[in-house]
Image (cartoon, rainbow, N blue to C red; front, side, top):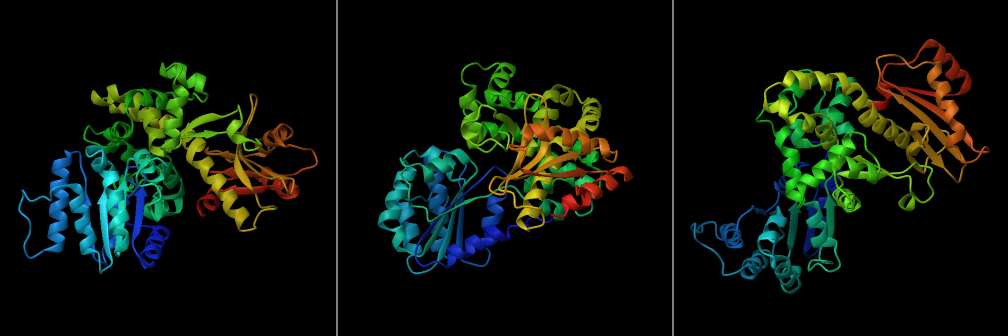
Length: 467
């Protein structure tokens, strides 16, 4: 499978920074396995660069490794011996200034948080060297890291030594669905959406997926005792968080259907601190807090509920984390049966609804809807829920949508059920209300006739995936 795809926007941003005059300082960060290293090395391939990656070693060991990398780049004809090292980090970093004084040089310090964790003064040292030496060179310095929280603190916190030094930041997000479709081009649209619901857009996961075998065949491979898919979520939490077991319990509670802090805390067995844990997971973009899209002040709304934002963690804590004992016993048939039975509902409530909302945004921006939505999301109260809601307060217009991932075509009853919810959702009876139905399996003839008469949009799966 192609290892590099659909990062044109990010590459264009890097090219723009490279073309600027003077020293540049870029922070590149994002969830593990989103392809940060691949992106930077792809960008570096046609220009002079020095690449160094930190690991979980002592400060002295990392300094020795970095020193050799710098020396060998500067003096390739006399490579450094295994014990070579500069006297301290400041000397080593100042050496990078000397080799980038008169030429544009890309220096990539990968997994920088590991180095900063090993040497607590490293960011202060780098700040000092940047202010007095590096900023007067032609260096293009890229600090990359998977520890999202630490990277944002090191670069974006007012109290952090490196605050204000970065000339650019790049948060590398997972691939979007159109890119995932390119990687899964042998699959049908149904299989592509199913895989997207399971893996999201994480390139490293997608590389391990074989679109020449069925989706459930790939799921069966996931249950191997040597599978990356089994050990990666615990590693991700352990790398980012100081109390990974508590966070895992919270994620498992959310995956089981708990949505409010009280319900999540009770299910996870955590009292009093659950809001703090949830805020941390939000800052890492692993969890999202949602409110009904019609709420005027989302941040202060008491109607918020939590979902797992990372698709694979959503799948892992829904189906795998609860069955690890069976998997370890080799009784994977029972696990596969459970996944296959519940996968359609899981896909419908996650990836398919997300794609339907993305369809509304795309069509609205292309001026192909009756109005241009300013906000798109979902809506709920104690009695009802609407999968897709788009609103424009200025135009007093709202769109209500229902999404069904079933093997049966949608019928007139689905439209009538959606219409019955309108009075609960629409802010004012004077607003213009539009209806849209999204279906994996098409629409009955009766619904098609009713929709034509009532000007209701019917959107099939082929249209949804063709964003």
